[in-house]
Structure formats: structure tokens, C-alpha cells
Amino acid sequence: MAIFAEKPEKMKHPELMDLYTDFLTSSPNLASSLVLAQVLNGEFSHDSITRMLAQPELDQKAYWKSIKKTVRRVESELFLAYCSRIAAICSLLI
Image (cartoon, rainbow, N blue to C red; front, side, top):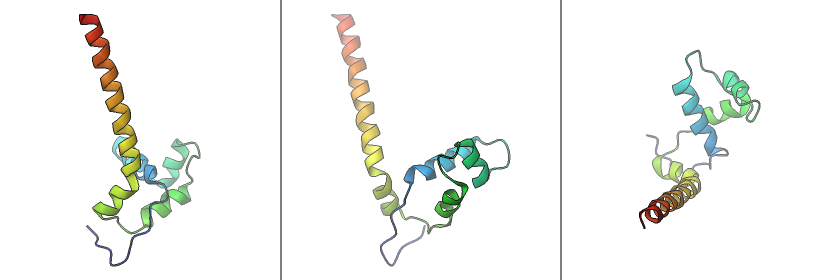
């Protein structure tokens, strides 16, 4: 894990790292930034994927800061969905 002497640059597209990781784990063929860009129908260019891969490694604190808002949003949505399901089950039992 890299330790930064200075404040690391904020990741421009944190969701791109997740997409790339999913792509690598699910790709049965040769994986490259060009192929991922084609799979994403141009949502991200192969150059932006290459730049993301070339940036310095984020330490845990910097990575958490880059994804925290998304994690909290999804966490909240999942909690609300869970509460809705529990309420629906309870209404069936009454």
C-alpha cells in the first residue's frame, strides 16, 4: 500500500475503478482499456481508463474519501428497501 507524503489527487471517476475491476473479473478474454471502452459504449474513453490506471495508488483513507458518498447512498437505499420489505411482511401477518 502506498503512503503519500502529500495529499493525493482526488480520483476523477471513482466508479471507473469499480467498473474496471468487475470487467477484469468477468472477462473471459484478453482485458484491455480499449475493450472496456467498447463494452461501455463510449461512456469512458480508453484514454480515461488508461489515465485512471496510471494514477498513483490510493491509500485506504483516500480511497474511502473517494467512494464514501456513493457507499452511503447505496447503504441508505438498501436500508429503506429492507424496511419496506419488513413492513410488507408485517402487514401480511396482521
